[in-house]
Length: 199
Image 1 (tube, helix red, strand yellow):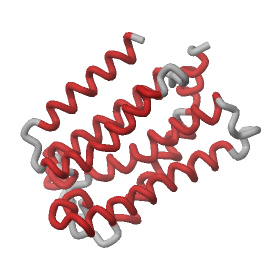
Image 2 (cartoon, helix red, strand yellow; image 1 turned 90 degrees about the horizontal axis):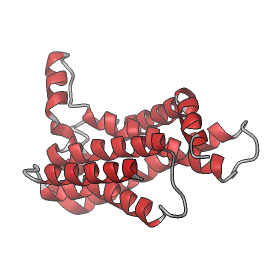
Image 3 (tube, helix red, strand yellow; image 1 turned 90 degrees about the vertical axis):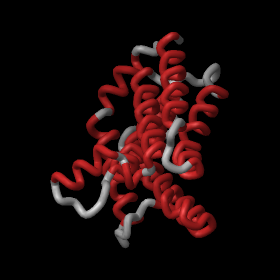
Image 4 (cartoon, helix red, strand yellow; image 1 turned 60 degrees about the horizontal axis):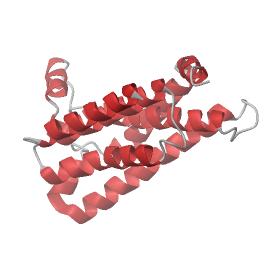
């Protein structure tokens, strides 16, 4: 309980700090709203379903990635500007971190729900279904980005963050897919151990 409260307080503090002096208020809102919605859902369902501590940490990291991107915009995160210049990259690639965690986080959330609720009988199809859902979430988010960009002018372009790269949408989904696969196959034992501690 104290651990969960600590994560929530830290999230609220980071959110406020992220908002102060953010580059564009509308872009900050667009980038951070998924984190706020997610936290509200977690709070509303907390008494009925508590995730393992490992999954909460992953969710917290996902939220941090979003609010950092909201503060600077994904195309202008300073560390990744430095990486761009140092390694002669053509763009700021912080958005790929965002899309990696967009696959990684949801995959582990879905996995824990499926395991604890016995949604899938047997383990043979479990990983495939989890990764497929994570990829579907990523594809749906790309549709949201497209819709917002088309209807919001320059602010929407900052939210879309393609930086002139014509294959940005496809590479975003690929990065999310890699994140989901990484989560399911490399972190399943860590998550299983964390789930076991609940009982």
